[in-house]
Length: 152
Image (cartoon, rainbow, N blue to C red; front, side):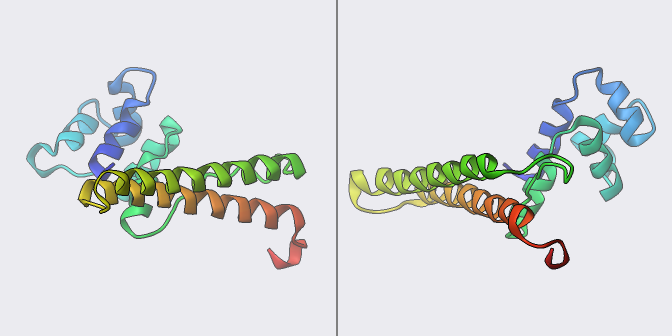
């Protein structure tokens, strides 16, 4: 998903009227619509993108930005929520599933002709990106659970 599609996905996740979201994010009833379509060169400021994500609770934009910059965005549970061994076990299972998904994508890609074409590579890279996100989430939660507070 590209950045513009991600911004639209965040806006589409708003359960109310788009005009309400527009007033919250842009300060006017039409600002959001104009910026979504680029009317007369209208663009979102970083503050507006942050407000959009905070208002909708959606994180497509920051995920797309991180991906474009070669990184990942991790939505972690609040520090006050309990992270315990069962949480880590579930995260470990998710890592295993993502790894299996990536291997399956590679197998599907080479099964028909022994090569990886452009579309197949994009699917493999997307699967690989999801795996990296999951591994980082597992590590972060592990450190939260097991690392002494002064080393965090």
